[in-house]
Length: 283
Image (cartoon, rainbow, N blue to C red; front, side):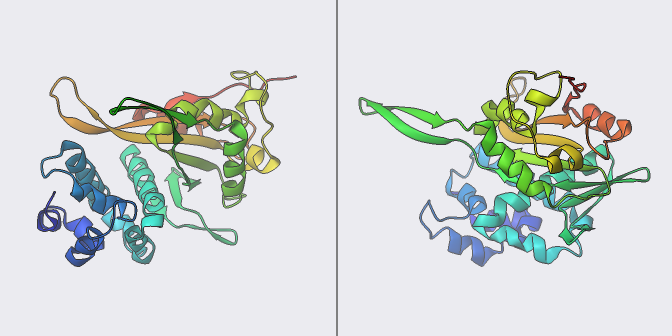
């Protein structure tokens, strides 16, 4: 087990949100109830994956100190198990935007509420909504002997993602370009094509002409781009060290009322995102 004292001393920004007594209290809970960050402490003291994860969370908090100021109440929600992944996703996307060179702020006001992030490129303001999507559900299918179990996962059709996109898109700006960021777990990487189809690529735009789903009017007009984002721990084969790898796909909406500026798309491409920019398909 990784000692709480080691975490508090080595990761001061984590300790600000997760003080000594809070972590110790979480470690007394059963594995189903324990906070996701505290759960990292339950593995071996020298567990590479846990240490990489803690370093990553510490870096997000440290490099976004200035942007978090004024929004401490919101980000203190990290301590709540049910809100942790959603708020961490905002930090991850915020850090990505900062590393791209954008000026940005958390919780910018929009009509009747707040968006998650606003980035500024030259004089263009772009609003970003950052929902998360849980990974695939696995069900036990068959046991083979004492040590082997065959699992099957439940794949989700595009309709499942369409509903999520429509619901969250209502919080985006009506008068500025907007990006809908869907943060997915590694187990959902196989669902990326379903996500694109749920966004409407399958029947509207030339790159995906197979039968699919019409997006709603609000998505068609208000979402300038769909960013699919996933990160996971992997190993560098050259030095045998583990690190956080990011996979990003920016699906550009050519029918949006306020399209993404070319300079913004280029920044995402330079960062390493796969750009999907289909031409409009005329039926």
